[in-house]
Length: 624
Image 1 (cartoon, rainbow, N blue to C red):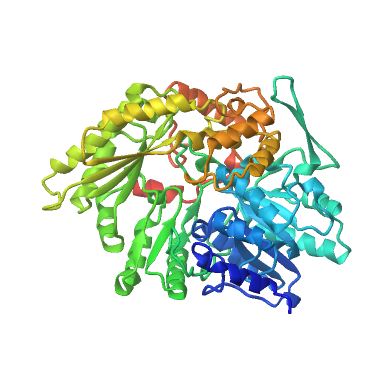
Image 2: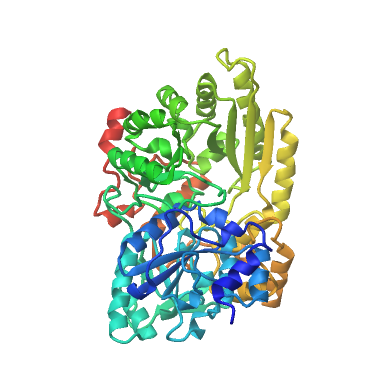
């Protein structure tokens, strides 16, 4: 008797690392009757299981899609290289975890793009699934490949790969896309007609409907829509966070994952306007979920998953206007049930004595803050709006509250940065250590540990620094060495990110359609898991660039002019180019901009919510 597909999979599992990544069957996973569904969606996360299963967006959309009776959404993760090799050796195509069915049998194969260095995994997963890599090579009955996530604010490096790109938040637009698909399926599906019709849905970008012309110097001359497609595509957002779908349970992994806990989203967007931070711009405007809803959803998730920790997710947790009420309500059940609450992304200027007392009751572990730069001049340049005094006061408050471990996040290579700014990182870290030892209320018998991490600045689309060059690799290495020399205390642990990977990230963050040739060549050379040190090879990538006749420094290390057409200029994320230019000029003058609740800076995002950005402004003013 011939061996079945699932038997093939089971036979190789004991020969690979962590077979639990590939078996499915976890608590709360959804299995449906194939004969009873009309749309099958493969939700692909182009990284390993432990990373993908920690991602909140996948949890939300997995639950939403499966709440629709005739839709079955399954999870797919990038197989680790040992598993990919075994799958190719035994002719096993990439499959959905819930059914074990090959991806070729699905209607949609969707990828969430969280990180530019996952692009090679997208190609590897499509190839392993037996799906043509380029959209132009796919037949009428091939799955539709859809891309979403923060990286699609510039999808152009993958434009020739994608059938559909979903801009912005996916809860509502996905359902509209499924409705359209059902209609076309009933009429006899025609791929081209469906894609043209999908282009009329707000938030849907169909790259094949747009032609790109280039100038002799390699810059973009113009984008031209065809067949009546819109000239500008606007992202989708959710208007009411308290009413939008949120899952009552999560799939509970059977192996340990990176963030193994319940997660509740408390708001989207950010009021701050840090000029390097893409998320702070592309997720605008700020929209909060009311604290009763957050409390109810958090308790439900802990009940249905068994987790004893819940994380309150946002870009800046201490900016949540109902945080005191939320923590008071959650204390009513978290203390009794021994559930800890974590608040990631705390602002330095939002850490009060009152918050300290509440956090001592609901959370454990260290505290993390992000000064981002070592000197006040550079913090003003990036619009961090945090002073050294505030940093030290916050650390003093934390030490008074019993904390002894503090993590500080900085960046190297920020625009206008000097070696004095780099040295300032070590100086500020030492001042935090000194603050601990001069504090009379410090925990008895304990020392302090300050971990200072310095990532490399990457210029990103839709930020005021989108025109700035990235420091070249040699300069970053020099600055890292200078930073190392500036740290003298053993109480300070110094970490930094690899400059080579940051260089490639910058290339693809601001890349155009010409980069698809490089991606294909790098994939052929074996590039996979480029975000992992053990697999990343800059040399292989540089060979791919050279063989394609493309200079990566053109994308990473070149300053743009304001009048240059950028690869993402035909996409509307709510932020106007005029606003970004104003902010860039203020950055070069080290001038700050007040945050959104203090004064509207006119970024343009209010058009997405009918003229109102912050419905909680009055409450914030009352507290201030």
